[in-house]
Length: 334
Ligand code: NAX
Image (cartoon, rainbow, N blue to C red; front, side, top):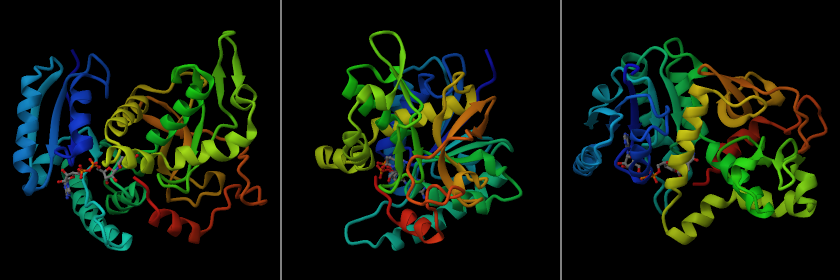
């Protein structure tokens, strides 16, 4: 068997953490043959709860789980980790300004960036889940410059991607594996653009069809579908009185697994990655693009005509402006 990989989950005593750690221990993150040493970090008020999660992980007797580090010590948590899944952060409480939450998270992410740079494996792969995910990833990138390759810092938009696949599948009465190549452009927020224009679906005839042709309802695709995906997080909160957890956890596994093990030929996924200026998104910002992956490296899929022309400027099809970035980053949904 290969040597165990160390996987860190921050905020592991929280709701996403509780859904995510068993998936990791089952092999959903790095495949069924990869032994795992699970690192779990939370803050002192959650220490007992974290200890309880550790006890349950032991009780589940996962064959792949070769060790558990459950700690409130940031250094111990980050030491030697190969994958860091950043779920922990300060939640927005009632009556709090977004700015205030962001300020708190910026300090948390700066502190954790320094531990990441000092103690993690040099080639550590990072996925930020905690909101505002794009901004937190940007803070990590800026604060680890020179120590961690910016390409190794990503944020999660795979949940939005999966939500889009699922909506199309539901609509057409197929399963989500029959749908591919949707794209989430932008941020994990209600300003994202879920794009089906390059996507295909395999129908009962066994053939691949353009999603637009198969759905054959442009009005629905251009309006309701987009809103459903953009506002899905809020819809879950309405029903569950808690934000998405199992779907977020499952999408984290999809994100990391595809990143490390590669996307299938002819298929891309959506990841929040550091922009190289593609599609007019300013270089250096963390933005969700269509990406293909191979051997732990992602590549932005180029040459996609963006049908979402909020701008007539072909070099800037998304109508990106600095102002828009500020608005986006302040408008995180769950
Ligand atoms: P919870 O509040 O249940 O869990 C967060 C955990 O983080 C808590 O156990 C808390 O003690 C811990 N924590 C707080 N500060 C910490 C620190 N400095 N270091 C380590 N741990 C710390 O939230 P949960 O529902 O699990 O959501 C976690 C984050 O994911 C939130 O920021 C949420 O907004 C974000 N989400 C992002 C999604 C995405 O697609 N990118 C979707 C789901 C989710 O809403």
